[in-house]
Amino acid sequence: MIVKVYLSCCGGDKVVDLVKEAVRLSGISAAIETVTDFKEVAKDGIMSTPAIKINDRIVASGRMPKLQDLVTLLSKAAEDK
Image (cartoon, rainbow, N blue to C red; front, top):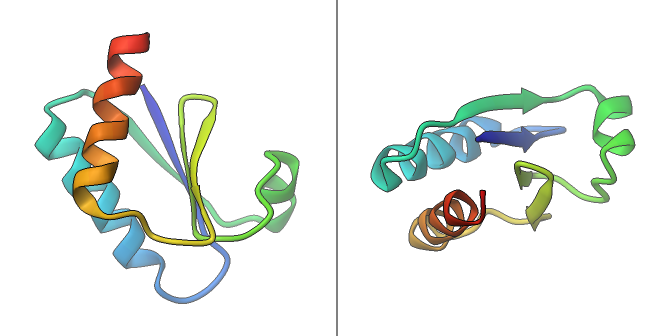
């Protein structure tokens, strides 16, 4: 599973830490990638940051989801795979 975290400004560490903790709690093996290049962010269809994409699905944009919500999203994505 690939989890991409899209960032453009300050506060990015909190989002990355949240994603790492959610992956740990879910027990799922996932590669976490951080994308900060504006061209890549736009190319992937992200309109506002922070944003999180699990595999090829944007699950949050313009906000930080709650930890438990992110764990649930990761678990569902693992089931769908």
